[in-house]
Length: 427
Image (cartoon, rainbow, N blue to C red; front, side, top):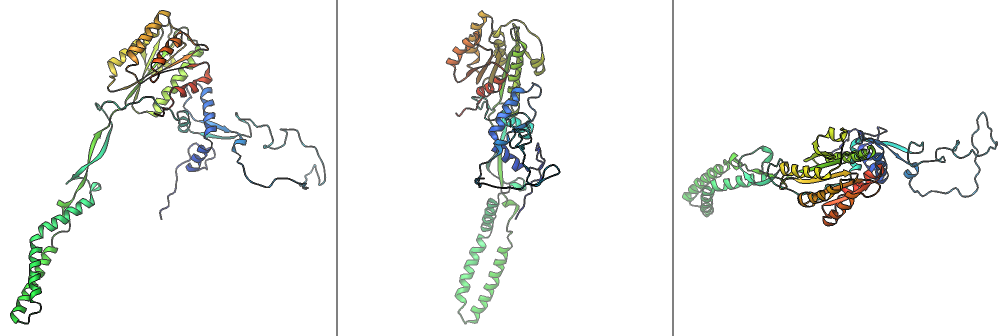
């Protein structure tokens, strides 16, 4: 009997004693509580530490389980041990609530660092698992085989050469058996004839027949030894499983992150937009291997930039959203052919656009972008719908499967809106 000992570290365990299996069982058991704690944590964090682990607080009342036990009914008399101040038979008043009545009777809280809460730490990986659970890029398709880097090995018949671990035992033994039959066929036929002749002489008393039978026995023995000398298996008999390298269709994707940084975007609005895009960036990094990200900042002009500039540059100006859409369309034409790439666009804005530019923007999205993209997600950061929201509503009605818009009013809306936009679809 094999005994497997799990010596892996219990990473992130606050006690350092829980095994990995027990830890995973605990996480599954309190999944809903942990998910709510993770959601609260995401909304309260700064941009730079969104992806670290966290302490999870579970109220003690949520850890208790219903059990069958005897109640305290009836009258009971108990004698408790005394100390220097009290003696047997002394009577004293019950202390007020929260003052020395024990941890189980004090005022508990459902969040924060209350003494009654059970606190444990989850690692960065576990934290991100909960943050991005059940999320996926919509409408992802397998694209062209060109320039693919993904391959799989599949069985493709048998070969006479290969590495030892690929030997096909059944095929090899079958070939060896066939070889032995082919090489010994004439001898077996001769042996069968000699055996029949010998059988006919077994009952004869004629000295000539007995002499002839002895010669036949010698000949039969020689043939049998000759047949046995054939090798049981030869190098010629070895057969190997042949593996063929099959290219897999590419599932490459590109995400265009388009952020409005015009003068109408206040610092809080920009901070909300950055948090949204940071969540999106972490989601793509964690969930997909072949996803590229294109960052575009725009005000009255649009410009492609790197990650550092996208999140921390302070450039601002007027508002022409169509410039960013035009730039995205140009980049798609130049670098991301539709046949090879799944194309996604996420836009964040306060919804305020130059009045005459909104129609141009709508035309570019409807005629140039949506026919080529898998999904367009628009996030408007405003208390009330602005002119972009009303225009985009028409697009959403027309392209319901490929366009979605959500409104964020405050920091608490970021994570719920993100989950609604990228929730895994059942189809």
